[in-house]
Amino acid sequence: MKKKTKITVAAVAVAIATIAATIYVIRAKPQELRIATREAAVGTVEVTVMATGYVQPVDKVDIGTQVSGVIEKIYVDFNSHVKRGQLLAELDKMTLRENVSQAEATLASALADQTYAQQTYDRTKLLYEAKAATDVAYEEAVNRLSQAKMTVTKAQANLHQSRVNLGYADITSPIDGVVLNRAVEQGQTVAASFSTPTLFTIANDLKRMQVEADVDEADIGKVKPGQAVSFTVDAYADDVFGGTVSQVRLQPVVTNNVVTYTVIVEAPNPDEKLFPGMTANIIIVTQSETGLVVPMEALSCTFSPAVMKKLHFAPPTQAAPPTGAPPTGTPTTGAPTTGITPAGALTAKTVWVQKESGIVSVPIKTGIADGVSVIVEDGIQEGDKVILSATIEVKGTNSAAAANPLMPRPPGRR
Image (cartoon, rainbow, N blue to C red; front, side, top):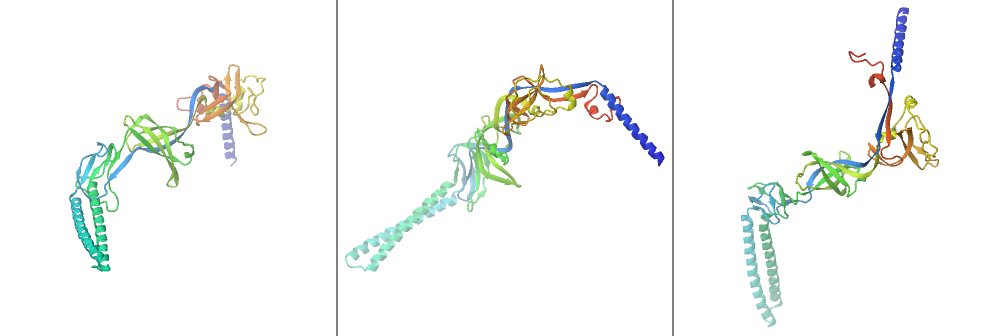
């Protein structure tokens, strides 16, 4: 046991000596202060909302039929350009024509019955006025004529309906446009007993498209009509299409407990590159501001104590800094802090700026930020070099080895 204890103590001593020697060697090497800066420049910062949607025609009509029958002829196909009133297809009219003939015969019979009832009424009326017919006979004549007239009216209505149904056998286009879908074939039977079957789908103008996008409930409050939109589709990966938010629909869509709202984006399509049904990845610009831009990294720049010793700070100026902000040129350990007035009402952000006289801490007033860059409304000027980071590196040593002196070196390196 004593022997093992001695070996353990010796091993620990060797390890401590090795670490101490390594640290001494690294500290003995020359160290270099690296300061990363970025010049403040005029630019635009945009706050955006991202969503996915589908390209659809602005005006799209599903054309069906109100009567049942067999498709006898089809005159158009997919992508056919049609005019309003143009004949698209015809149903078999044989049965419908027979219905019209039957309705005409029924009407003729009703008219004949009405004529007979009128004649009977006229004779009975003369006899009744001459006291040669009873009250019962006269009332029967009146009732018979009234029923005959109602039968004629009903027969006329049935004939009109039969003729209308015959007209429905001609399927025509209600608008000018392009045939997107033809859902029937010649010889196919369509039944309109319970619902109107769709035969054709026609888009009015493919040069005017819209994107129906699903926006998450967390972002929908930022989206307003009139905001600018850009989007891409997989078919043209290098092209960016533009549009405008035209409508924010209030009806929620719940899918797997995720609530989204439909946003309609008007998208001009003069070259007709966009096809109905394409998937669009859209970016909605909810806020935009142009001004002096610096990276967000500058607002959270921190200095370690070792770095602080090597930095050259400019002498403090005599001008009183804004309430709550650190004095200009005052070195502090850490990032520029947010100053708070005694009343707790105002805040001031600061950045480190590298000037010829040294590093100074400058209070700034910021505008909107997109997570990467931020607008600076006051405090610095264009061309000022704001500090993003400051680190100390050992010359001739990679960053990994400098961070961990015990890390194994690659073969062949000493």
